[in-house]
View 1 (cartoon, helix red, strand yellow):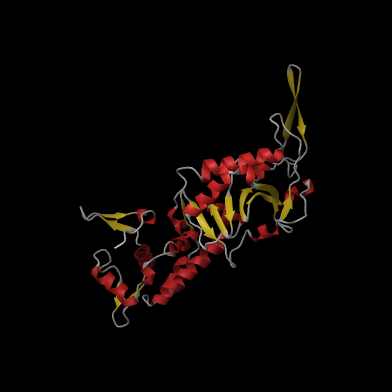
View 2 (spheres, helix red, strand yellow):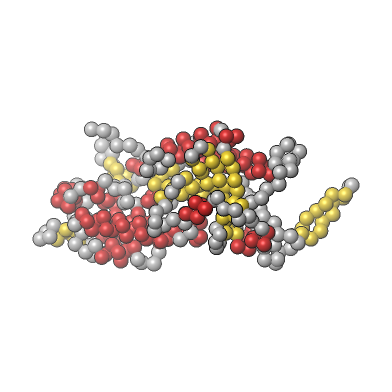
Length: 329
């Protein structure tokens, strides 16, 4: 992509372009392995079904239907991954980097390795590759244990054959691979797009990304010189639960961080909401954080999640500002 940042409009534009021209898109399917080589090609039958479609055709239609129904629906919203703590039912846009690059192995898609049934115990997902010109979109589907019946040979499966007026059941001993109608993660360039952050945390080391992001934000706050004891911020995110680091991530795009310490201190002393909220060391002109409640108040300050009605003077705790655009002065 020509631009460095991926936002909601670019995602919709790309997906719409692919969806409107499916016949112009290349399509390949890979099994993702737990250990190297991480990608193995799926060899697919070229036999045609009763509709004249091959298995590849059927898979491609299914993937594009998922893109249309979920990722291009009117209800689909995309937000920066720093909004993780909001627990909104939206697609997160998460940028991979050198420190967090769980799908870097997709760069090896020119592999000659072909998937074999004996590889199934080492399989962790399916990756569908859509190509059009110089643009590539990956669609990742995670393989849960229920999607691979008989992988450990400990579940009794049955298959049936129909003979005249009766259906005969017999034991199904071979391994099976279920391909579901879903896309757990979209990968476009270095960006991950998903509504399932728990999948990232449980299988792709996302907790490391969360803590690294929170630590970077603490460094940004420390650089403003507004806090006298920034080690309290580090203690806060290290309390043993991801939710504290996630809360810190909320202020990753805060415009308040651009204010000088003097400007911010003046706002704290004069704005009704923040007046008297923090203990101020007047000699150093810095905020003193005594408790974790003080830390959460500081997060709220930088997050600017409160809004006030100029008509009724009523204050609201809301995330609407993440959707609304500022009015130019």
